[in-house]
Figure 1 (cartoon, rainbow, N blue to C red):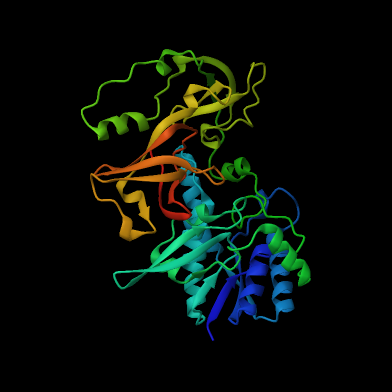
Figure 2 (cartoon, helix red, strand yellow):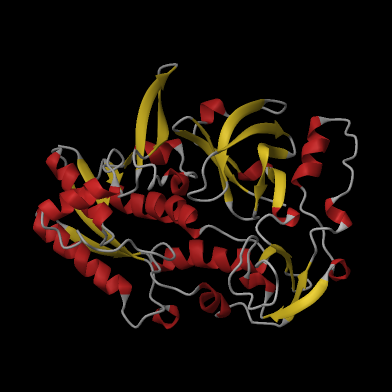
Length: 396
């Protein structure tokens, strides 16, 4: 009998995942990951991880499976929290959920599971795995979840073949309503539980307050750049190669304070991200202000009116050579090669038609349509059909 360790989070998805595996005849062990201790930055006075671990325990008892809690808060702080502070400090916007899957669930946690004699690790993600044979080797594919509304393959875009080989996603074939229905039928305590929001495992955290623990607030200017500014209306130069054209198209505009007017003050450029609209507290504009750039060196935030402001859009993005990650190693592009794909640059964004170009200087993604709020530090993930082939961190 194959042994599976399920990451029981205290939510409905992982509860049903554990139930389904048991039904399929696996020997199932439930493991709850405790990743966060600091209650000083949680929003409500409830202690979410205590409640969650309690729910996970009740589910395990109901299903008659062994259960234990593992404390991974040290590794979490080291690999996720410190990384987040560092990224924000450098003016980038990290994605802790993608990282958490790569570094914690499918690395630290997976190693613990394997040390317990597990053959597989299972999670409650809405995605699917398939395996095909190529030249006598098993190649694992990461596929979108059947529920288009809940597909979470994006969060797993940094997994490797080794990690996928040991992963199971029992609810990937189901929709969220079907999952809730199963939980209700089984009378699981999590059946009606709301989906968790906020940082993976940290629970309900207010990001600026969380960041303020390490990043000191400092006052700076908010500048509004008009859509009519000449920087948006320059003629495109002639290029002698595709690479130099892509370099040009993927470069963010360099702003300075003389390009617009001062419309307010903020408490630290590193708390803000491109495309953000809330939290600026500047009124009196015809259309809402959106952040088009942040400058953490000079502590300035640049904004533009309306979600169609030209400062929000770019046609291409760049990924540094060492940040290019292929789940399908067998399809990795060589220098000079290109590939037509569909790309998303944030969770829940509809897939966008694009072409990958690989050079020694890294990977460029050129979109058919200009994209809004391409943000440094976020992950771009590329697909063909239902399959997620690879991903990389957007760089400037």
